[in-house]
Image 1: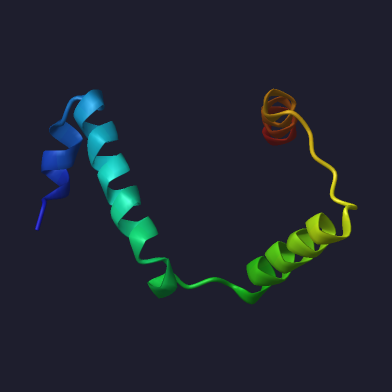
Image 2: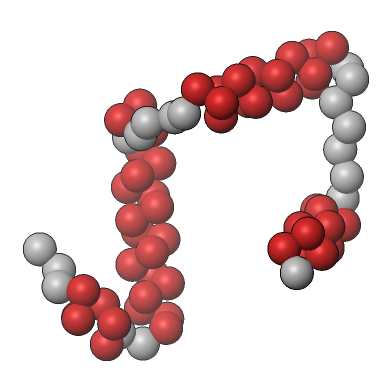
Length: 72
């Protein structure tokens, strides 16, 4: 097992590599990841809106600005 002290000592580039490797591994086993019911309900609702043609989308740059403004 990797000690957290070892991770803390890694340069940023290597930390990002490890993070991406972990995410890739986790995304391969998504069935094993628990999903709260509220999250599933929200995803189902959004899929229904897309199928019905009523979903609204915004540019990713605009979305990032809205998110940053909301958390400030």
